[in-house]
Amino acid sequence: MTATIDNHWYPVAMISGIQAPRETLLLGKKITVGRERGTCWVKDASGNALPTVERFGHLWTSPGQPNRDLFTIPEADSPGRRLVDVGSVKVKCSPLRAVENFLDIAHFPFVHTDILGAEPHTEVDRYDVKIREEVDEVWATKVKFFQPQAAKSAEGGITTEYMYRVPAPTCSVLYKTCPPRPGEWDVITLFVQPLTDEWCEVWPWMALYDDDSTMSEMVSFQQLIFMQDRSILENQLPRKLPLDPGMEVPTQADMTSVAYRRWLKKIGYTYGAQLVAA
Amino acid sequence: MILYDYVLSASCYKVRLMAALIGKTLSLHAVNFHPAQEHKSPEMLALNPKGTLPILQDGDTVLTDSADILRHLTAEHPEWRSPEDDRWLAFASDLNNSLGLARLHDVISYEADIEKARAAGVAALRKLEAHLTEQRFDGLIFLTGKTPTIADIACFPNTALAPDGGVSLDPYPSVRLWMRAIRSLPGFIEMPGIHRLHELAHPA
Image (spheres, rainbow over the protein chains, first blue to last red):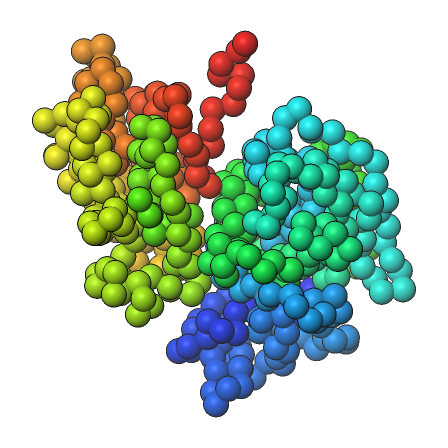
């Protein structure tokens, strides 16, 4: 394993869910996660303590030596938001496939029918994508899409605006129109723990403005959406995400995915990826 | 009628599906089964000491067994009942304890002897395939006859969700045809992992 891959931060637990020490995998290696007197810890297979960060309701660790702090989401700190621990779902797919699926809008009418999309509103209009060199993140902005039920708090169909952000190779943050507060963005994240290069544990987390729904309703909504993706993800081929063009033919709607793959290749993040020999 | 519901539960889906097929509206109360284990909370245990879902509340009646709930919902719908139902409702629990358990293990990390759960699931699927093939020889598509009953609704969810637990449905053509017949029923609703038939199946 190269330092390029080890030196990132990875989510390994939901803090409110840590009870007895629990064994899990990170990048194919056994680790143990636990909590003592309110402080979370992570140990590798030899019993060595790994660095930890507690942020966004989750515990993060790194098997290497991260050269920068875990990213932040300043919008999530604004008052009045409800922070939603969605819990994890395991998926037999490359961690990079899980992130890429989260970045895709075109599948909404077909996989999340009548919720995040519906026929005949299938067209994805042109949007802006770039790799922001100064922060080393992928951003897609001005993404607009018609949605029958954009969120638990939405009443009827609306055109939703999205911004997508990839602040770390196995994490994505999306900002979307907040139905009850049009001037604000709802924040929905996908934190992916790579168990192996073809198996992951996915920890969605949300920071929403929604004064009406119960916490259980918001959790149910997000689990419903994510489980609609799971069977699709487990059947995607090739199993590993191809970083070189040629294996798959992208379309206009896939610009975010193209940028994500290009960025992974640029930073040398190849865990769960497939490179074609030149 | 209030259904205490978990969106990813196969047993809760049986109830939602049955109600949809007979045109009955349920008031859904979302329970955070995972990750918060809200079904074990004091409020929920007061309603159902077993700490399980689904729970159907109809006035003073509280039902906590999905087979009982299916019978209750169809009490005035004899077309959804057959004398053969009971054995299939029992078979539905076998599916839940095998395929259903494998699914909870693979998706939300339930503790289970996964190989044993999958093997029991495959054994159950073979029985189902054999029976449905016999039915087809007799010109019947559903478990107990020409039309669906609560037997079909009880057995459908954990069967259809088998791939979530790592069990393929490819070897069972009669099971797949039967699932397609259920998905074609007027009023059918989906759940995550069970997709509705694409409209190409019903060209205008």
